[in-house]
Amino acid sequence: DQQVKQNSPSLSVQEGRISILNCDYTNSMFDYFLWYKKYPAEGPTFLISISSIKDKNEDGRFTVFLNKSAKHLSLHIVPSQPGDSAVYFCAASATGGGNKLTFGTGTQLKVEL
Amino acid sequence: NAGVTQTPKFRILKIGQSMTLQCAQDMNHNYMYWYRQDPGMGLKLIYYSVGAGITDKGEVPNGYNVSRSTTEDFPLRLELAAPSQTSVYFCASLRNTEAFFGQGTRLTVV
Image (spheres, each protein chain N blue to C red):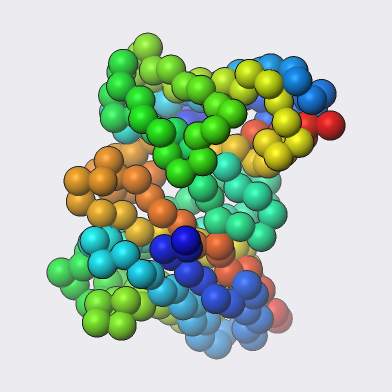
C-alpha cells in the first residue's frame, strides 16, 4: 500500500530549464509535505516543505505546489543547475501520527549541460 | 556541529549473525527514526522513538529491535541477520517537522 507515489523514476532536463517533479498521495490525513534531496552515499537532506493550509511555498529556485483536492504536489526547480542532479523524495506526515514521515520511491533528476 | 552520526558506514554480515547499528545525535531532538532503503524503493520506517525510554514499531519492524536509553542514542539491533535485511539503513532525528538524516549504513547479508 504505497501511500505516497512518485510515478516518474527519472527525469532529464537541460541546464537553465524548469524541472518539475510530481508526487501523489492517497492518505487524506496527511497535512504536511516535504521534499528531500539525496546524493549518492549520503543521507537525504531537507529541501522544502508545505503545510496543507497553503497551496504554494517558495524558497529561491525551489517552489512546491499543493493541490489538496487532487492529492497532488509538485516541486518546481527553476532554473535547473547541474548540481541539482540527485534523487528527490517526496514525503508526507499526519498530525498526531508520531511525526512519522512516509516517503515516495524517489525521482532521479539529471540536469544536463 | 555533528548532527546525526551513524556507524559503521559499511558492514558485511553472514546469515544468522547479529550486529548493532549505532546512531547518535547532538541536537537534543526527542524524535528519532530508523529507515531502510532498498534499491528503487523509498525509505521504509522500521522503528521510531518519541523520547528516551519510548519506542514504537514502524512499517517494517520484523527482525529488528531498538532501545532508547538516552536522548542522544538510538541503536538498531539485528539479532539473526537474513539476506532480506540487505539494505541501506538511515537514522534520523526530528526538529519540528524537518528530519535530519545520518549518512547511512550499507549492510550486506551473505
